[in-house]
Image (cartoon, rainbow, N blue to C red; front, side):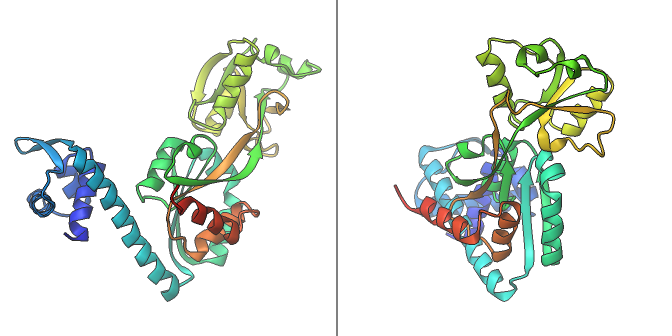
Length: 311
């Protein structure tokens, strides 16, 4: 048994049991992967995959346990490399952040600027996606940390820490009737077509819950994953927008008006997520602290240690 065999095994599972796709991703040949998997099965004395001829159609029950162990071993092997890198070159390497458009566009620019200035030798990457996608990127080792609002805490394999709370706002074109209201209410909002986030994004669950609690059915005519898209369609008069307060920038959004909606919707919490038992390099701790100053290295390390304990 060797790490290469475990990489091939993990690659097949990651690519939907398609050996050809795994071979392409791992820069090797399909026969080479098949041979190594057969050798691994012979050594372990079990069949890892269910086969129909030469085609893999599923993972056997003992195979599922083997895959889980293989992933842990590959993860630990990666940690060993990161320990060596940390002490060879503390201020160089790579850091990949998986995050949503709202965080990348409105919350992270100042942090990224500070980080790059402090660590010019670190290659920083931003991967954008919905919260489910970015959680999977961290779990799959494609990203080091995830930053998002929804759903990160639902993954047991991730350690999640709260960064900050934020609220929603309502945006409208100038001279919109809502601007004449003395007090913004859900009932008044529900009288207009609404443009807001796709359900997976930026506190959308809090928006739905607020309307449901008042037994109101909002007329949502368009959803988007991008706050800038929402603002664009509000500008052309398609409806009013509900979006994250941080996404409205008065000096840039001069053709829109913002109405605070903190009293209408429960606040949302942006979180940072890290894979359990991950070895974090010093500059990763520093990035997290730049983004959320209360999440010092000591706080994060303590949370990671607690999450790694059994039971």
